Length: 286
Image (cartoon, rainbow, N blue to C red; front, side):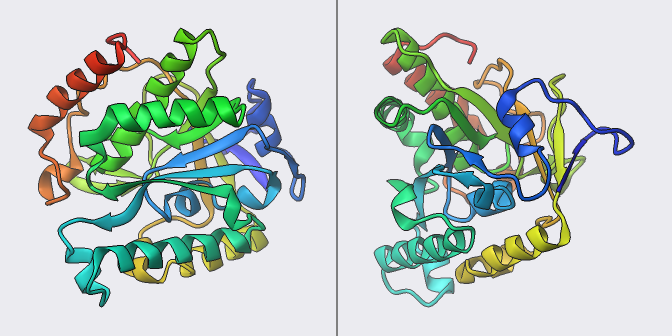
């Protein structure tokens, strides 16, 4: 497995962050990740974003903010489920089967359990629960979503992870280091996948070897209810970068979910961020 900079595939990049050095280490090298959490919005996001690394990350914990089942029942109906709860249970079984392929045990998967597409309305609760989780499990590093205007649950998770770090600082606890990954967003009117909005931070691309790419493909296949959407994602590269401060009230210039009925209108987002920031007594910039 080789690690290449996203901007250029000509030279190997020397990452300064020790965990990224380990992730970018030679093929087959595994490492202790008992203090690492992957915090994602939906069951399957962990497979898309970091599935190629999970087999190497011994002891990693995975947190799912939502249960993957929207309240409007459209996705449940499309997959043949009469009840939202049954669809959520199916998605839970799928993610446990997927990560098991990488050697991750079911008890390593932790569920906050917000209904899919509802997390933007419960930002304060999610941030508080994540802060408790990070403190209890002594989490030192988190991988999570980039703030990219792709899906409201992704952006909500990105906000909540950073907010949890600030809550920990107020308790005189060391917040975790945070790395982010891209999933999907809009660029020039088109959907793009696993491509960061440039922000000046170094970007790291890991090229998966044939064996690892095949393992990731098997993990993706385990998410049976999601096959109609998972085909758009790359299985041969994964991208990460350190977070940088951003004003979460200001959505990216193009917002993909403005074109879909995903439970939130972009015009409502700034007020929800302001409300959560007041509730949690957060600074403007996260």
